[in-house]
Length: 125
Image (cartoon, rainbow, N blue to C red):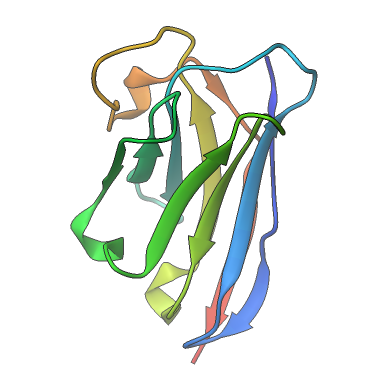
């Protein structure tokens, strides 16, 4: 199942963006969904994840208090609300989905099965 990430763009420091992640075809609700980002020459970095029910979330320390992950299972869509953006948040952002339902939220690339194509976020100072 291919995921579609959207909502990226250019914003000034301190601004906000909301990213969306949805499957390219309606295959029903998935397991956990995570957001990652990648800058040139670096590995993908886990940012946030949400479980199937949307009640459990996990964040990397660098985005806690600024980014909020949520999911609307009726719309089969996961969101990443990004506030107080900084120039160092500039990256390509990816969403990923886990097929199986686990008791925890994976925080590594290998923990997910399906990936989106990425959406570019540029934050200027």
